[in-house]
Length: 185
Image (cartoon, rainbow, N blue to C red; front, top):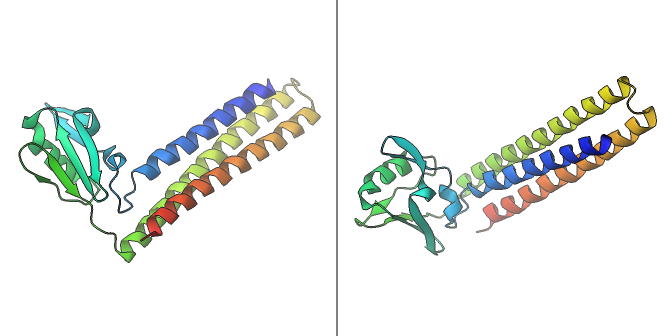
């Protein structure tokens, strides 16, 4: 019973780290990455559709993204969605493809993005701690219902703390790597 609770906590904490990876992939680092456009939704025949489900997105150069829609008639809609999105890059098209030239990041913008990354890391840590809190309450409930002993409760709490520390450290490590990537000129 305790093992199930701990396994559930571990999988939920791992999902928090995966979500952090996804969030950090959308932060622009001055390098072209198709993941930058993962959250862009295009109004396609009245339905919001992810851009990556209606086009091929590639990075042929370090500072250039090329969007090749499968339906050429949707190019104006894609441009409109890109301009409304928070990526801050103006698209240019030649009638068949849309190009996004990724500008160099200024020092102020880098610092701004580092702050944003720190906020996302902190959100992931909070999610991990919330999982710990939920699991601890489950363990305490088991003890109160006399399903486990006090020793079992203490051991489970200790293992939960170790899990939490491991995943919080992992979130810090992922964040430091992204911060290093952002500050790299």
